[in-house]
Length: 257
Image (cartoon, rainbow, N blue to C red; front, side, top):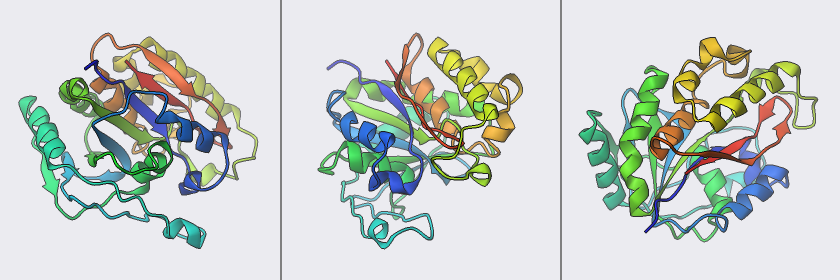
């Protein structure tokens, strides 16, 4: 079996799952654009812990971690099974590189995970395990976590980092609002560095990138990108597989292989 690529997906608003948009259409076609995985490990921007933690439920419930959206969104279901086998493999891979890992038997899937997978794999027949981020840790930590997970690619496991290329919700004025220059300048920098595979500079984005803090007031939606990049392994090539803006949100997605 050839190693699967890793992905970084900008998941955007929870409404992506049910509302027509370019990102909605992209995600609907994603599952047929890459080989079918045996299982999916998703690193979500919406699960923050002190050290890496994996979901251990065999029937993970959905977490509706948002407020004020249409009733239809809260009625959405995605009954993908969990996988204790994947939990064990991921925990072992992390431990082999010195990362202690916890397992949460009751944690469900938040919308950073189920929103894109609901569109990409609507049959919900591929096991899904979620991995947390550690916002108190460094960017280098997240790149190293990804590198520890690299062997899983050879086992047919799809590693997905789910966040957003830019994520300043305080500045968001709607999907149709003009995209300001401080967003596009950061996005251009991000494209250049991601496509160059420059993990070191991407880890130093706070000091290297223009308007880094404005586009990521907190790092939660950026960190999954570093895990996906690290998990691709040394020498992996990046491809931009989706482009577009929803106002101040850059909806770029990348594939690493």
